[in-house]
Image (tube, rainbow, N blue to C red; front, side, top):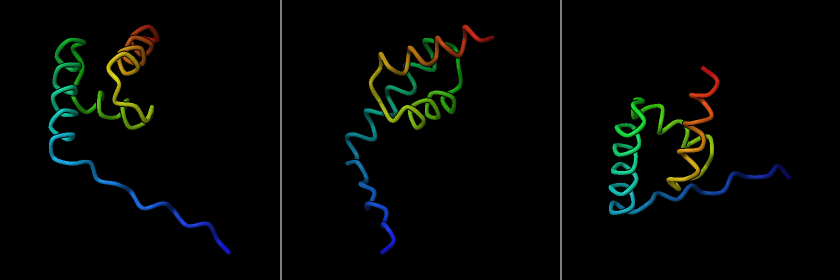
Length: 63
């Protein structure tokens, strides 16, 4: 039997607002676009500020 994908959970509106606030804050602080911050969050699977900031700084170090 083929494995099935787990159902994705949609966060509540309060959680979405908090994530968007984090995206706006991080993009402004690190002078990158909000799309880049969202992509980093998606790839790392974490919305934790410290983890996202580490990834942003790693990307900046490569430039």
